[in-house]
Image 1: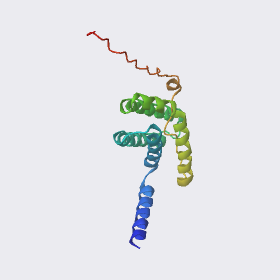
Image 2: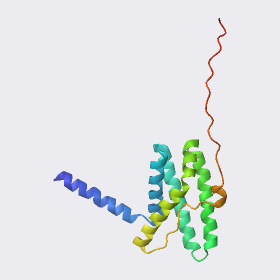
Image 3: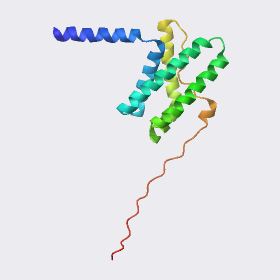
Image 4: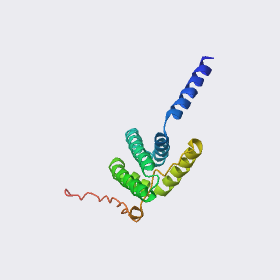
Length: 158
């Protein structure tokens, strides 16, 4: 009986906390969860990524409310936030992780759009994309990592 009550209380608290979250928090959490799983981030990186995504999601939601009637200005602001996040992620992630993140940006955009549509249906509000890569960034490429060559030590004492 105690286990049942405990499980019920945990379910209730989980529902209340997710209900109390706003659209920015929900979108940031959804995107962060997907990125943490795909990029295999450690605890430190996960905490930093969650904070970074939350900060950027709040900025974007504010821009969406401010420039709802001006799509060109909204797109410009969202792309600016995304570029800033990319710079911050470059210093947080390893080279391999950042390269993987950069190559999977389209999938992350699709994930966020789908989640934003769910929020829109649930809340009846317009939700824009959290990740909006620019055309300029899409052309950027990364050099292939060089293979380390280990040379045998020369024998000096023969």
